[in-house]
Image (cartoon, rainbow over all chains, first blue to last red; front, top):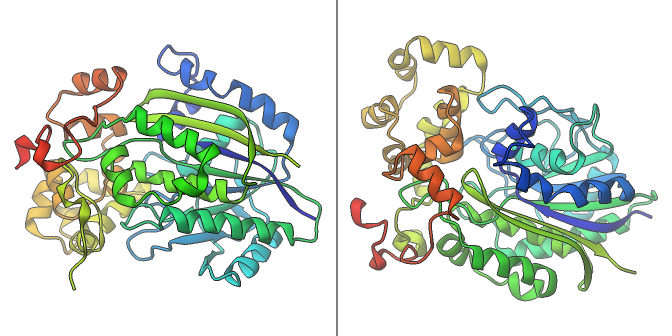
Amino acid sequence: MAKITAGVATSHVPAIGAAVDLGKQNEPYWAPVFAGYEYSKKWIAEQKPDVILLVYNDHATAFSMDLIPTFAVGCAESFSPADEGWGPRPVPTVQGHPRLAAHICQSVIQQDFDLTIVNKMDVDHGLTVPLSLLFGQPEEWPCKIIPIAVNVVLYPPPSGSRCYALGKALRKAVESFDEDLNVQIWGTGGMSHQIQGPRAGLINQDFDNAFLERLVYDPDGLAKVPHIDYVREAGSEGIELVMWLIMRGALNTEVEQKHRFYHVPASNTAVGHLILENTD
Amino acid sequence: MSLHKPYDDVPGTTIFDADMGRLGYHLNQFCMSLMKAENRERFKAGERAYLDEWPMSEEQKQALLARDYNRMMKLGGNIYFLAKLFSTDGLSFQQAVSTMTGMSQEEYAQMMLNGGRSPEGNRYLSERAVGQEEQ
C-alpha cells in the first residue's frame, strides 16, 4: 500500500531558480537562503521518496486566461520545464506517475472534489524551484512527481479550509493505492510577499512566523483564516500560502517537525521552509 | 449582484478578480504570446505593429508601450502575465516590481534587504501610508 510519510513546505521564488541556474548559490546575497536547505538535502537523500505530490501554482504558464482550473492534477507521463519568457530553465524533464495520478483523480473526485485532469502541460518555476532546492542539480530528478496545480492567480483562490480538506482527501486516495510506495506531499509558494502596485515589497515577519507555528501545531485553526487576512497581512501574493494547507491536511494531526527555516529576503519575498514527518 | 470586494480598502494593491480578468483579457493574452521566442523577436522588431494585432484598448496599448506597470494593473493586467513582458525586456521580478513603488531600483532593493515594507500603516486605505500618492 502507498503511504504518505512526510510533508515539505517551501517558497518557490523564481530568483532562487535563477541563482541555481547561474551558479550564484555561494554569493553573499544567496548563501543564507541555500544554507537553510542543507539539512533538507541530506534528509531527502535518506528518505528516498518514490513519488512526490507537488502542490504549486501555475504562474500564467500552462493556464492562460482561456482556462483557469481551481485544482488540476497532472496525469501525464512527463512534464517539460516551461519557457516563461526567458527560455526554459535548464533542469530535467519531470517524470510523472500516470497510474497513481489517475487513481488519485478517481478517488478524490468521488470524495466530492471536482478536480481538473491535465494530460499535457509544461511546468514553471512554481514546480521546478522546490525540486532544485531539495535535490540540487541532478541529471534526472530522483523520483516521480505528480503536479497538483492550484489557482491562486485569479481571485478567489480556494479557501484555506477547502485546501486543508483536499489534503485529507489526497491522503485517503494515496492510502488506497495498491502499490507499495513512499509518497511525500509538498506545499509550495509564499511566504508573505506582494509583487504589484505601490505596496509591493510588503513583508510581515510576525504573520509568517505565526503561520509556520500554526501550520505545525494548529492546522485546524489556521485553515479557518479568511482570504482577506492573507491579502491584508501577507500581501496580495502571500495568499499562495493556502497551498501549504493541502500538504498539511494530508499528514497526521500530530506531526514531528524535523526542520524549520525562515529568511528575508529573496528578491521580493520572504522564504519559509518546513519539513514535517508522520510518526506512526 | 456585484462581487463582494473586502480587499478594495487595501492600499496600493489591485486584486486580480473576475472583473479585472474580463477587463484585461486581451492584454494578458498578448503577454502569453511572448512565451514563444519567435513572438518575442517580432514584438521587439516593431512593438506597435505587434500590439495592433490584439484587440486591446488604446489606453492599454499606451500603458504597455510606456511600460507603466501600475497603469497596466489598473487596466486589468496581472503581474504573472505581465512577467512575460518584463522578461522579454530582460528585467527581473525585482527590477520590474520596483518601478511600481515610486522608489528607485536601488532604494527598493535596499528596503528588501532591510526586511521589506512593513505592514504597519499599510493594511487599510484609512491608514494612508502608501495609499497617499495614488488616491
